[in-house]
Amino acid sequence: MRIATWNINGLRARLGFILAWLEDREPDLVGLQELKMTEEQFPVEAFEEAGYHVAAHGQKAWNGVAVLSRKPTEVLQRGLPGQDDFGSRLITVRQDEWSFTTVYCPNGKNLEHDDFPRKLIWFDSLREHFARNHDPKALEVLCGDFNICPTPLDSWSEDRHAGDIFHTAEERQRMEDLCAWGFLDLYRERHPDEKAFSWWDYRGGAFHRGHGLRIDFLLGTPAVEKRVRSVTIDRDWRKKRGELKASDHCPVIADLD
Image 1 (cartoon, rainbow, N blue to C red):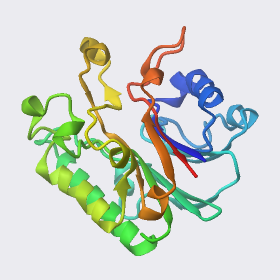
Image 2: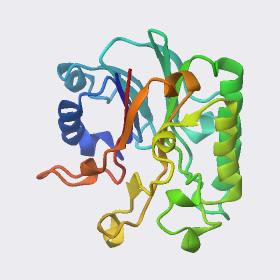
Image 3: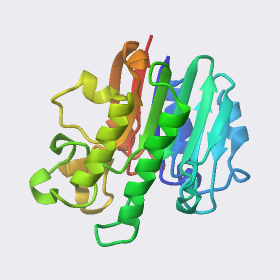
């Protein structure tokens, strides 16, 4: 079984790119973030032709999340309860014994912006939602763009960015709280000392200079982690493919038994 997460930074701009990736990587369950379209606008037929079912929670021009699956799924939750003002940022589906949630967590903008304390509250709500509605002993996956670098190892320059947005103690505490509920960072479990990134700014040659952040995660409960064979940050798919322009994020992939 192959699962993945990917912030695609606009489905309209990336449709051909995503379809090429699906054909090449053949994942079974994929969480997509930052659709930037409503559910009615979602090109379901294109994904069905590629062999995928679609469950989406969209929004005009902003945010939006979806799950692509080889097998049919049941939608359990659209939206984070109590956080509708922050937009369409969560969807949970069930496939057989698996619970699969993908999220597009708020950015926070900067430490002086009103969105920063709201970001922290959103994460508190996410933690509370899992505590109320999910089981840390079950097969639970939470994936997506978290807009947090959990440790200095996840930033290209902790010295330069310590205390900045994505790098604050308050944000990092929220990731620790999620893990304390029962999640493990599947990539870090397999690569405890590797400095690798999933996002690079389009500007300033950041990708080629190695100026990135690891902010996209596959989190799993211990029952999931026991089944993991490998976890990969799919860096090659951050590169342009012919006329197809990549997202500023790349996919993260896990292969499981």
